[in-house]
Image 1 (cartoon, rainbow, N blue to C red):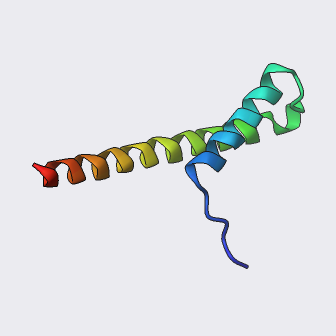
Image 2 (tube, rainbow, N blue to C red):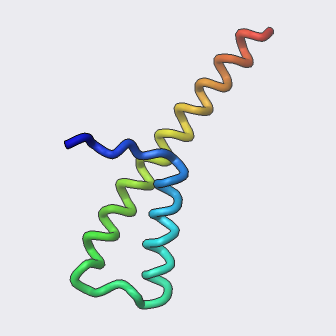
Image 3 (cartoon, rainbow, N blue to C red):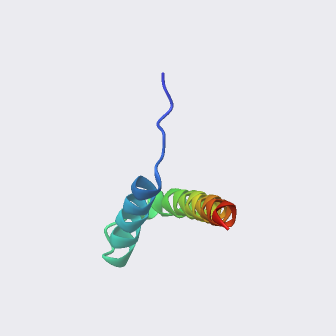
Length: 65
């Protein structure tokens, strides 16, 4: 089975969904810790993606000088 490729936008969308459910008490208590752990994974992924993109942009800009 092929592993899903996560994009930055999909991660943000999933984070927003988790946050919405938490804010509106729509998250079952049995799933709360699972969703908080997933949110942590998504945040780590997004931070890494942003850092990687920033590094790539800086590299391109420095090559233009």
